[in-house]
Length: 140
Image 1 (cartoon, rainbow, N blue to C red):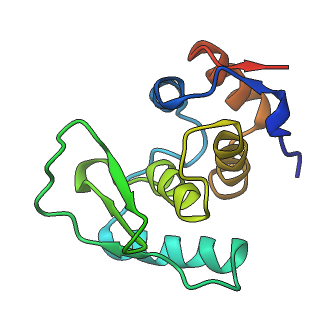
Image 2: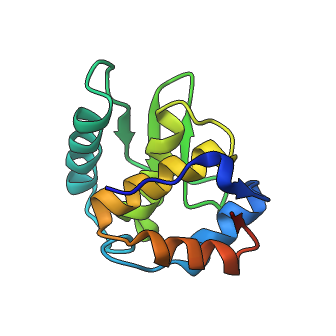
């Protein structure tokens, strides 16, 4: 699988990452998942990507405080929480990328997210790069 070197990415920050995520809709990235399926998906991805560490726990999200956010990774509790209305592979992979150690929205985070989207959602690198360009992210 082709991967993207984070050193090729410019203008990657929280605003542009979220803008990118509003633009892309490729493969299986935006297919809604039940809570049970999302737990299984997270466990499967984690086992394949980070088999030497305990996986994060997906917790039900019933009392969502921030109505604008789709999901959250809680570093200290190693938990992922995603609003039911937007529980999709793309959102879960975003939070898994944080759980893998990419806590900030920076080039390393986006390169890892691209890799996961290609592997688990069937996205193509060219599509992701195009969507990133629409969001203001520069790929050299």
